[in-house]
Amino acid sequence: MKIFAFILCLFILQLAVILLLEFRRPQRALAWLFIAFCCPPVGLLFYYFFGRDYWQSRKLDKRCISLFREIRAHLSGKIKLVADAADSGNPHFADHKELLHLLSRLSELPVTGRNKSQVLFDGREAFEAMLDTMEAARDNIHMEFYIFRDDEIGERFQDVMIRKSRQGVKVRLLCDGLGSHKLGRRFIRTLRNAGVEVHFFLPPLISLLDRRFNFRNHRKIIVVDGRVGFTGGLNIGDDYLGKDPKLGYWRDTHLRLEGDAVYSLQYIFLKDWRLATGEGMNHPRFFPAHKCTDQEAVLVVASGPDGALDASQEMYFASIVAAKQRIWITSPYFIPDPTICRALKNAVLSGVDVRIIIPAVPDNRLVYYASLSYLENLQDAGVKFYRYQKGFMHAKVMIIDDLLGTVGSANLDMRSFYSNFELTAVLLRPEVIAGLAASVEQDLQHSEFVEPAIFRRRGNHVKLIESLCQLLSPLL
Image (cartoon, rainbow, N blue to C red):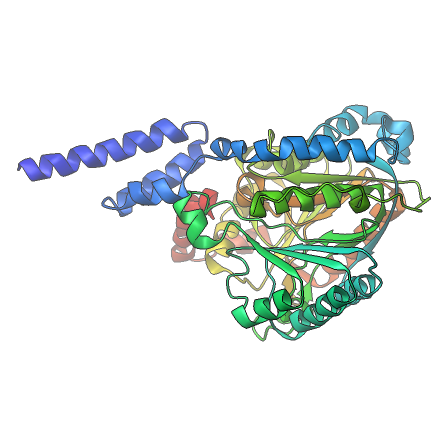
């Protein structure tokens, strides 16, 4: 009897600790309470290693404060700042000055006005552009990816890195410790033997012991000579070329940048490099004067658990609230928090055309069922959902009226909002937004509308699975 009472006290203490530490995020608290009920002996142990609250990790950024100050000094006078709607190059911002002001304050990175962007809508096109740009490198190549595979396309990147390193170009590769944990030792050793610096961001064992396992670096960055940069949804792997027999054709969106915004990509890479290696690099050669004369306005939004704001969530929310005509979104994982759900509902009730494309073929069934669990409630408000049929939809794109378009690594899910290190480019030029919109319209032609009446008739067992997955969705 005493043993039973002792176990009961421990169980109650476990629930009390979770409630005390997670009251700021009720959904997350509910998910951890569910785990605690299902696994009472080890629930608190799981929470200790995997449930560290997001705000606690913001201490991670202290080492980078001096780095940012030094880099900002290098950029003094080199960039064109977009201070108001007139500088944005988009006349529609005349009625949305407050949105532009908010976007410019999301992180330490400013809205810059001397850029040129090229949207890449296919993995093959994007990889060729990356490889060609790397071949032209003269001083340094900086690469950062969540997933880097040692397959056919991975070996092509390896060949270029080795060749450029032997030519005297300084090549650095940063991979996420979990996302790239399958990268072969021989592959890494070959790179290092050729002089390529390879490091991993929060390796699994170290991050587990340090209670940072949950915080993954989901960014995709290439910066060549500080003048040309790439970012978007593509990692390095053959599956991104449509060679996965299960997923088939891979639909993604990536971005090539020249101009001021490349300085932002370079800064983010150097900051992440310092977090991963402890090495602070701030040489002026990483920020050379560029020759881009195009006047396109671009904002690079870096978000993560090291930031003062949940920048991705704030960017999505503020943009959705500002919409008056359309909100078009493509996202492979759709797990919005309550604030985003409410914003989408209010937008539809205000007469905004809200369309969201998700995959028809999942790469992760648990996350997929969690995504489906949000559809019915939003469909009742009038949100239109489509399932992409041609292959796997992995593009992370948002289009708001003719105001802005976004391309990046952040999904519309709570993991991207609160746990992952993410990167999103906000594009303000009307012609670029129109191009993104045309691509979404083409994607809609390859997508099946999720008819609300038919979707409601799915089996009760499916609804039960969806509900369980939704309960855990804040942790997915």
